[in-house]
Length: 108
Image 1 (tube, helix red, strand yellow):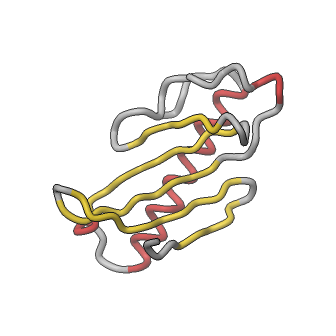
Image 2 (cartoon, rainbow, N blue to C red):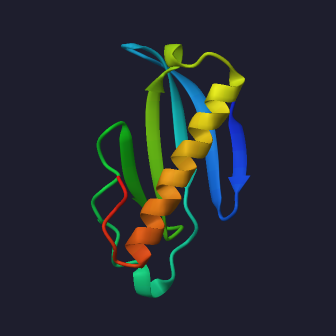
Image 3 (tube, rainbow, N blue to C red):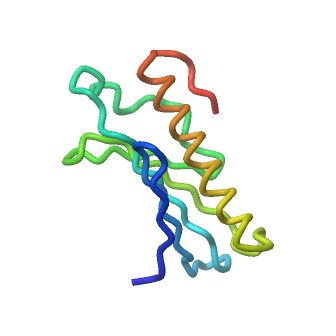
């Protein structure tokens, strides 16, 4: 198993790993969003996060979304830039979920 950096950000959990890919090494960031209330679980396929390096997956057993982002590892200068990418990804994912719960347009 590759090394993992994990951050607890409120109800969200962000994890970062390095993956070797055909185009070179990349940073893989996943954000598990808080479990949705039963009344909101029908909005599983809300558009807005897919594309632009983001994928949004639904974890049926956990009742939550998982947002995944892959970026070229060469784009990162130091550990701080990795942490910034994790925080940015978590912020975007949480804003997306908040918009979904309010039935507002997605922010991205």
